[in-house]
Figure 1 (cartoon, rainbow over the protein chains, first blue to last red):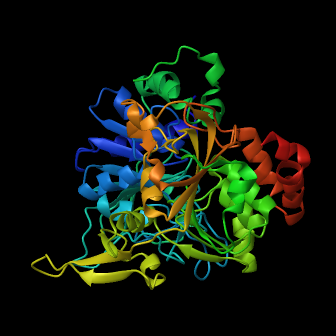
Figure 2 (cartoon, helix red, strand yellow; figure 1 turned 180 degrees about the horizontal axis):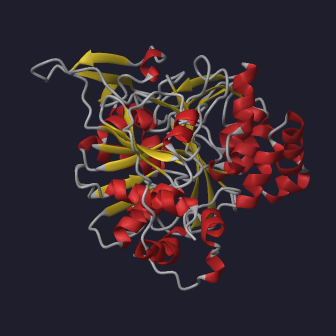
Length: 253
Length: 274
């Protein structure tokens, strides 16, 4: 039995390893991102040579100058891939972490832009991830732009969204708009269309998002969960029924 | 050594001060924030470096804050910061949105004593439109057009944080959280709480010196055991997730927040524990 989180993790891992995208040698993962973090650990545990900088690891944190160091590294081009989400995401891959309504979020206020306005433009690849797939989140045009998906000619940026992964599907992004790359089992092109507020391209037949392999599932439920327990105890309990106390011999990579 | 007690430390913050605070994962001074509520400070202009959490939400809820400049306000796994959201909706605070590296860069400019510093990215974000103090120029070193953002130096009146220990010369140990040094260097002074005062001089210990902020930047130090609680502190203790969840729940309403203050901030037993 494959659970929905495992499917999302495996889908993100495949995007990380996409041979047509620039190689990701150094991946950073921000706060409150258990699914992207698990995808990165899966890639590493599959044996790929990748450096992971997980910002919110309470122990063994990779930085000695906090997030300031992360942004300086990214400014130099030393982070290859990052993950962003959004309270709203639109068809041009603009993301809104500020809020709905007028400035600065007079409708529903979200937490704020974090480092998105910088990271999105300075990282060669960004995978957008938002589990909720609804017309409320995936809108024709975001109310406020925390970080733009597309920049005017002449504006320095190293990359933009590679893809958008949701609870229903995977969208690819080609620099101008989204295309429906695959739907998760249980969904169809039609259910995705009904739940999506922005327009996108789709082919007559849309494949299903592949299941994680047996080997991937074994890694996820074993060594990946081991790595995640300290930072994401609630997630590990919910998804894999594991608690930190039940695994006293935890080892780090 | 300028060692005073926690309430005296809070008394050093004048109404209306520009007060820089680190986020919940980086030596946030929670006990100090509670002492500021007891001191009944007013009109604070808070700066989240680069984001804000429990301490900021608590100060906003207690009516201590006029404005907050930050890149996000969040209680992490416990969800949104309820008093921040309520105060924004009610129009009782001014929110000045930023993005994390912009805040670091403004402090780095102040640290160097230069009037501004450039930062890549950000162009095309609505932040630029809503920050008249941020300017876009054409990179004077580029051969063709290359717009780039300039950020003004920002020097907080006071930076406050909670560290593991200080020595009697006022040197403060922040461990791997050396981004605190940038905040300290950029601010006019620092008010610091620590778990304990240690013997000897931190800067004379090769292993401790790299994680130490020189006492020349530190205005005063107060001992506050478990002074980061309910937030964690390096390898000393972890985040109290149950209390965070309780705060998030109670602070959903004004009434619940008042009960929280009564129980955990103003009650004689709560004060005595600090």
